[in-house]
Image (cartoon, rainbow, N blue to C red; front, side, top):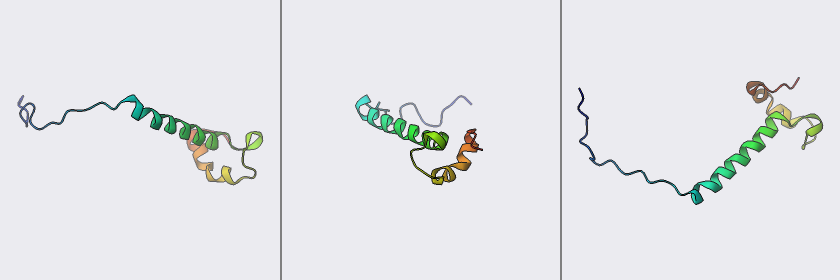
Length: 72
């Protein structure tokens, strides 16, 4: 029961780490995208609105409730 299916080192490719120079721009982009999305879901209404009207509020209304943001 302690036997493995494949012998040790049989065709398993080595994992190469990604350099920080490759990962950093994508991490910054993902972070900024997350912050913009969080703003539109959590704060785009009332006094802090960047877009006039209720259109953004209506598009993200269910997401607000799902994430626990009050909006009524």
